[in-house]
Length: 182
Ligand SMILES: CC(C)(COP(=O)(O)OP(=O)(O)OC[C@H]1O[C@@H](n2cnc3c(N)ncnc32)[C@H](O)[C@@H]1OP(=O)(O)O)[C@@H](O)C(=O)NCCC(=O)NCCS
Image (tube, rainbow, N blue to C red; front, side):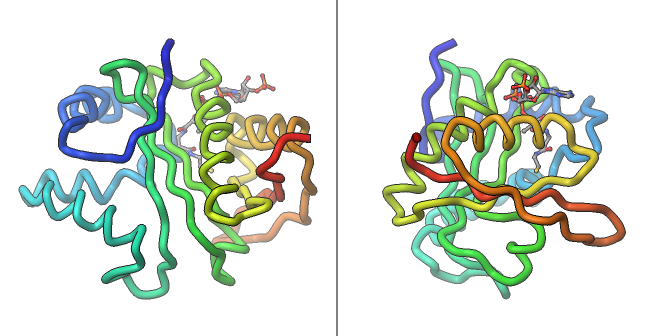
């Protein structure tokens, strides 16, 4: 695999659509959260609007209510769409409870291959450049893959696990991870 982070653009849409076919069969209950906006844009035939919004999100323009600026990257394996990573530039009280700094979504085909681990490591460099010395990573207590990836990162970079919060009736693990390697 030759993985690289790219800024989302129409150039990668065909690759995303291929991955999207796999998402449709996906039974993982944590699956869609961060890619629903693109699904909605496809349904309403407003893909240009989706890419414009991604640009705006980075610049803090026309943000939805309660949102902070965020930079989104797609992880590509040559011409294959691997996943999406959104780095929020700051936290809100809500993101401190659930969501944290980085949202991650890996296409079904690329899961269990350390794609999230490698992608988040690449995002650490970007987060550091954004001025974040550490990032808060959170996941549902039942999301074992996500938690293992987060704990693996904490081991590598250093950090601190916070007490879980209870959100919508489930426990949410929360871990600070430094953005520069130990
Ligand atoms: C959670 C998710 C991001 C993990 O991505 P991934 O690329 O499959 O994870 P990785 O291959 O990098 O593996 C990370 C760790 O999880 C473990 N893992 C991977 N899949 C697993 C699974 N299904 N069950 C338990 N552990 C799993 C790996 O062994 C590894 O742990 P280790 O270092 O102790 O061996 C991915 O499954 C996903 O996108 N899920 C849907 C969306 C989602 O849950 N996003 C995160 C919200 S917080």
